[in-house]
Image (cartoon, rainbow, N blue to C red):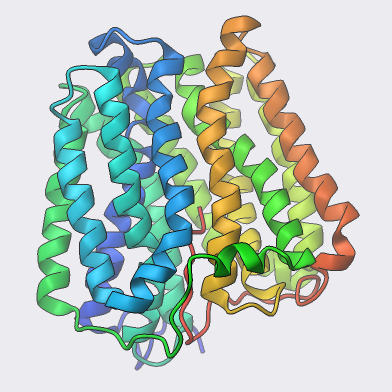
Length: 407
């Protein structure tokens, strides 16, 4: 059945609870790229260096990585609805306070609290959407993936529109939108059934003992370093006004959404997941290398084009993590996300430091190398990854709920 079919169970005919959670998910994912176009403005406003401002990503994703080990533990005890509300409340508080910061250190600390709230929310949203959806999970998962892509595209755009007046306004805007989401979730989402077995804090770490899952996580670690070098360091290289930088990353986000939701599943069905992933990683490596050594026009084109490869990779990696091991999907996904988000924390910090000690080209050489390293892991460990991988068909989750953060 076509998931866009307006009939029963189609993506356009879902309960209010599904639309409310998906809408809040858009705003949650917007928070990832929100600061992209205003990084130079923040640096000027707080008299900070690029490496100091890039810690906004590092603190955010470091807390997100650790929180991935906690979300299953929390949601299996207090339920999905309360976990969502707790995450939304934390984002409202910390995003609002971030807009009042007077120093880069204060802003970095508040972004860490924001990362905790976002982790609690996005790691639970997919399972809640699947549980509340009508007509099975297919349309619900597509709706979630669409929300993810829309949020990643609109985050830089919102940051540019509000940040043109002041770098503080995007933080206040996010706090307001998440407060609206909190009110809507409170009003329209009923409590979801708790899982039969409570998740322990060590379950995600134990799941990484599976060779296939560990291989997927290791490859994704290298890939995420490349991904977040592009996201966090490129704005300093482009050195544009918030409007122009926001437009570039909006186009990047649109490609990410289209290739994640539409293109990647079709490529997997034709070529198999591992071939698609390996090829996409190598193309991303070439693209990032050209970004680092090209002129400004080339850098803009390569930045936008990287969204296509990132969209494909996000989808394939998520499905590998969910299908390659015999661990419960929420547990496997939590362990996998813990590993890969550590790279998302490292890249924004290391890329400016590398540039300060060498030049602007070298961070992209390193990023190209990590993308190639991710492809090498796929090649060397293809035997461990082949279980439900080589012929894997698009299946982002099942009715048992998933703790996934596929960006």
